[in-house]
Each structure stands twice: as structure tokens, then as C-alpha cells.
Image (cartoon, rainbow, N blue to C red; front, side):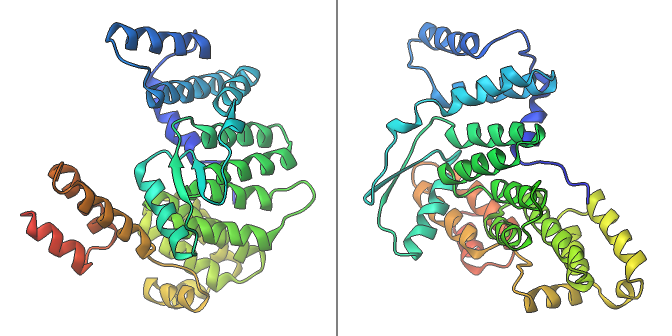
Length: 318
């Protein structure tokens, strides 16, 4: 499987229409500060973070790895000032959805610590450092940095998927067991088709390596349900067809889901994502009904037949 590191890299690659090749991080920061001052407002940390991410991608696209690394280091600079305890945790979530997801999962595990969301993109910085390290063949450092990215944002599916990929590609040899754990966590946290499909594809690769072609094919068929135009999935299915040609005539989507269920592999989004969106919708329904409806529609797209979601949308006239 020729899977490349994806996740945030691809997300910010979409920003290629924004040309900032001639600016340094300090210049970008100064520009944002000046713009905000002219509007008599404080610097928007989210805007500044987004600018730094765009600069990072421009440096990477230009092949200026040293400058890209400096940008990423700037994103994690000063992390030590956010020292948590058993009462308070500091995390650099990219959204309130990620924060709420983490809070719900932690509460279920009995963790009562208060979670504080910081605006500094520390998790993204470590994610980018990990990407650079991996491309430079520094696999140990890459794994250390992706683990730091996960520490600062434990809610992001793509970080676990990248960890799973890196564990398979270690110079010292593939760690299939830990890679599978990472991909299963990525599957649990996945809240969009791309992340869900990427996690299933990683699991398929592990199953192919173990010659469990039926489970691998099942992963790929369900992935295709989420990401119908996945070229990587088609390539892996073609490989399985050559190795075990009879499987494709015996396993359809329904059978595939049965196989995955038997192997404790998800075939649908985790219900916790619906809980998160409903909770946030309830929070917004009085002050921002459009936002509440948007969140509920998002929940409906993930679980079309969820009775609670359908009832709440109906009450809002949708």
C-alpha cells in the first residue's frame, strides 16, 4: 500500500491559493498584529495560528524544510507554561467539538479534571515536526513528536492514523500490534468519511500483511462505502483479487460488515460523536438556532436514523 502521510498536511495543502512564500513567521505575525491594531482589537490567536500553518505549508511546498521546521517550532514554543495537574488539563484542540468529545470520553473513564482549551496550535506544531522527521528518515523522533501531537490533542483521528502508519514503516521493523491499536483508535475518533476510510485502509494493510485477506477485503469494501472514489482501496482490492480471487465473489458489503463486527472493527461512526453534536446543539439552540441546526444536520449525516436527532430537528422545523 502506497499510503502517504495525510491528515492536516492535505487539509492545509488546500490553502495553496494563498501565496505567502515571501513572508517569514515573524512578518506574518507582525502583519496580523498591525491589522488587528488598526481595528482596535487584540490579536486573534486563531487567525495567527492559521497564518502560521499556511506559512508552514508554503515552506514545505517550496522544499525549504529548515524554514518549515522553524515555523513548526514556533507553534510549540513556550508549551511548558501550560502545566496541567490532576485537577486541570491544558489541550490545544482545534475546535469546541474536539474539546467536547474529549470531555465526554474522559468523563466516561472517570476523569474529573477540568479541561482548558488553549489557542496556541501546539498539537499542530508537533504534527508538522513529526511529518518533517519522518520525511528525513528520523523515524524515532517522528514517533515521539506524533505522540506529543496526540497528547496535546487526543481527539484528532488523523494523528492516530499517522502514528499507525509510522509504526508500520519503522526502520527497526514494523510494530503491527501497536499500529493496529492506533488505527482502531483513529476509527473510534473518526468523524468524517476521509478519516474513517483512512483508518480502515490502515487496518486492511495490517490484515493483508497477516494474510487475513477476508478481513482486509471487508475493511476495504466498507471504506469504499465511506469514500467511493478511493484509488488506494481499489489498488488493495486488486491485490487481494490476485492473491485470493474467490473472495470477491463471496464477500459483498453486507458480508463485509458481518466480518468486521466479528473482528471487533467498527463499520459506523462511534455514537459518541452524535452525543457531542447533540450536546453542543442544545447549548446553542437558544442563542444561535442556525448553529444548533447545523450541528444537528451534521449529526444526521453521521446517523440518519437517530431518533433523538430527528426529533430535535423536527422541533426546530427541519
